[in-house]
Length: 561
Image (tube, rainbow, N blue to C red; front, side, top):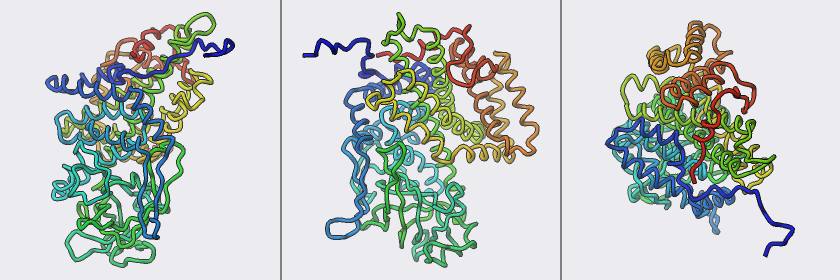
């Protein structure tokens, strides 16, 4: 019985037992917009089922437990033999199993697969983002493997399977498999051409022995890994701690490293330690050493960067989707709290200043979701025009959307006040997660420079982008002005590197504005264009023009429970 001095009132109920998909109007509309009508009923049914699962009390508890019980490294067994295994909490395996069974690695094997998977990935990221890493790596490995038809025929059915099998045994004996990757090294980071891991050819054609290290190896419990190493002359020198010399800098090659060999023995895959990370704590990121590690070449020798570009692009899109999911969950929590919390004589959601904050948050969330699903639809289309569009739009979106995630989560947390600063609210976990996607697969400067390369070397990419944003010309004078200003900036690329971030931000925001003008309700498009394109906006969220229909913007973002 509660003490008379401690009757609890004016607290928002938990946001639980609801459908995360159907409650997200922007996401539902994007799926309907980009999918073939013949696929819609089936896709909506699948996504709603995943949305209900994601919103259930049980699955949300799994997310909490997986985060509170991070993976443990088991280097040796009791007898001193190397194990090199990672032990996860049961909740991690339950979450990963649900993600695999929901088809979050199966986009390449069904019609409309990328839009369907993108929507599911955005929803599932809101439960516990850590298991998104192996799901993303497995999904993204497919285009890299397709550079070698024989490898693709062998591995793709396993990677696109909806069966999760956590046991370490030969992949040929598993109904489903997961992939990780190891690209970066201590001395190079994002400059993968500085890698010193060497590959020495073995007698069997296409097989090699690797010696070296990887500074960040994602998902080290996976069945296979894509890694980069120096092959050719450098690899033939071998040894010396992986120092292949400069002769191999032009021979960077992609390799597939299986965790368990075909005969059942463990490949040499020495996990030195797990990273102690700011967020993403349920997921394992490792430092690994190769010493006579067996590998198969993927694609042509010396064309490793080209071989993995499809994988990089796919994981960058997942960064956009993951950040959009985090923003959506933060906004949903903020709106839900303010709907139920009263202060100063009324509900917080009805207070003009709070409404401004919530509407500004909702704009960022919807713009991110709309852009992410448009990119996924381009993957499903697969035509030359869409491929050119993705070449510019993916790094620009990855740069901008992932950078908007942290300020959105911080402001949403503030909407809950002190309640948002405690772990039970879930907002601190979202906040620790929020910078990750901006760093993963190349931080902001890497994305900005990639956009510059596309502008300078691939005219078709800029043409495709301009055709896309031009579809909304004449619909909003602020968007028209922003497109004109952007064209002026693009006309002079001299000394552009120093202003690359400013340019890439504009590319992304103009694209978001074009999409919202074409597809979002008028009040959303009006508010976005007035603030992000028209300049009627302050330096922090919650500074929208007060004359806009902000109540409708907030209502659209409300999670229906």
